Length: 81
Image 1 (tube, helix red, strand yellow):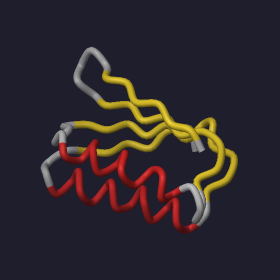
Image 2 (tube, rainbow, N blue to C red):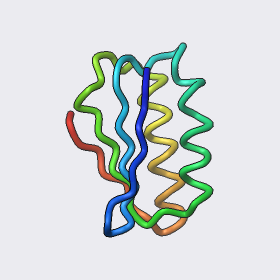
Image 3 (spheres, rainbow, N blue to C red):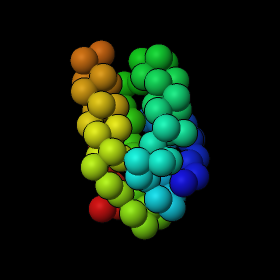
Image 4 (cartoon, rainbow, N blue to C red):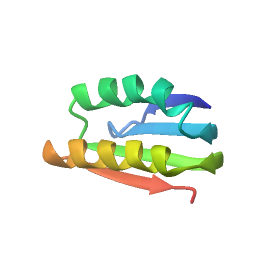
């Protein structure tokens, strides 16, 4: 699994995840998600178009991101499904 983070002109954080997001690789992504949430983003776009495999552990991490950002008043949009 690899990831890229970019900030758009409008302040939107764009997280692109590529490869495999599974029980093994999710542990590498969790600190990245923690850092994103700490910044209190207003909008996060998660691009999964380059993701080959997503298991329940990966889905759980994305749901956790969604809930945490929403609790801070932000929004999360998932693209590339």
